[in-house]
Image 1 (cartoon, rainbow, N blue to C red):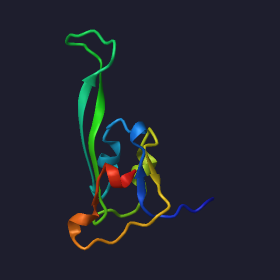
Image 2 (image 1 turned 135 degrees about the horizontal axis):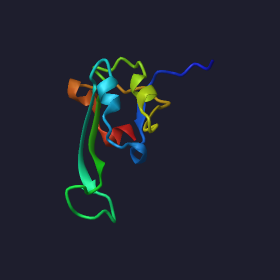
Image 3 (image 1 turned 90 degrees about the vertical axis):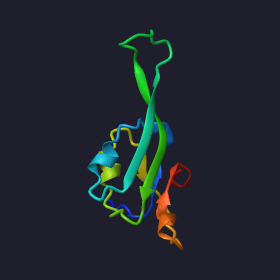
Length: 104
């Protein structure tokens, strides 16, 4: 069995479907996701139009994170993974809230 280092978490935006499973399964509730829906190309308009979720924001609050990896394990689309680097310290608590740009 290989040991996975518990460092920072990387978001793979192209794989994220905004399903919210990672946020719901997180025991510390450190993940916040916002998204909106858009119609699928070629989908006929109407009440049964097919749509998809589009990620607007993904924020991980490292001051709350337990580094347990549940979000990574539960993501059915492999949109989260362990990154090689540790989370840098911050001067203010708000500096530990990383959005999509920092999580890439």
